[in-house]
Length: 357
Ligand SMILES: *Cc1c(COP(=O)(O)O)cnc(C)c1O
Image (cartoon, rainbow, N blue to C red; front, side):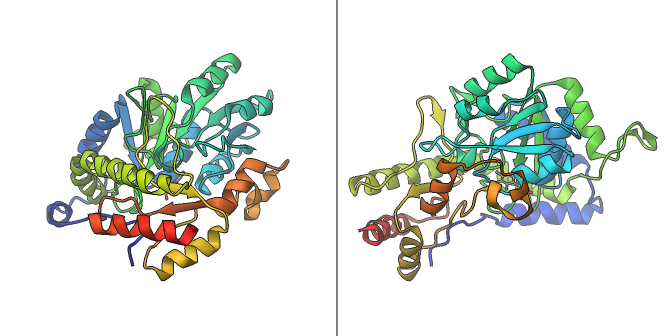
């Protein structure tokens, strides 16, 4: 079976972890600091605050942007759970907007309709490795004096006109879960261009302490381990190459699937898509997915349900989101990861064309 995703871990990561274990210093320390510096450089952010996972990164990013009880935060309903639960963790209310059917990202025109006096922030999710329309969203934020917080958990290295996601918002969140474009085991990071905000993120991460027992606010323990940091340093060395391979793999699939008239991912002009997922739209999606599995090709459905209809989040649903609901029925993510061989890619393309026909 060709897997839908595959974390790439080898000798380099194993040796780096062994080194940390032998040092006896496992908690946040030198390795995390080095990882933060290198990750910031990679995406072009001034400050990186590493945390335990992407959900924590979102929570810290929202808190540091000033989101609190009684606020509303506009986000997309077409995302992973944590995009909304992190808002709830702040005591705020997620307000779900519809998507642009071409990019799967939040539709700025719909966002405009949802602004109220309670809106504190807009949180776009750069879904599947493609940036949201940050220029238009920033404009809306400026007009209403509200914060832009980026959920960049799927978009390490994605860019708009040469500028990295994670540098547009007051804060941004990344995830290093094993299936993401790079991993630290579990892990996450908040990025920001603002010095004071960076200090606030560090306080929130470490029990609200400025220094040991000098506690100035109620914080959390959201620290990353040096084991995670060490893995991250090794992964970062390879991430540019892996991203290139993802883009090449996507170009191949675009060409082969495009010939068969299949709706392939859309990339707006000036955007660098890093293909965390390669998502197509098909009719009879579940049937196509089953056929692919029979041919030995793994695939994924992100997402089968909008957040506005998902479990306890459904209480925040205020209306239908037709474009999200349609996407939920049609999307299928195909293998695009850098562990694929040329032969695998050929098999994926041929099998999809056959399954759709
Ligand atoms: C993975 C992901 C998260 C959460 O990250 P974890 O590290 O799993 O906590 C949040 N938002 C999006 C869009 C994600 O894909």
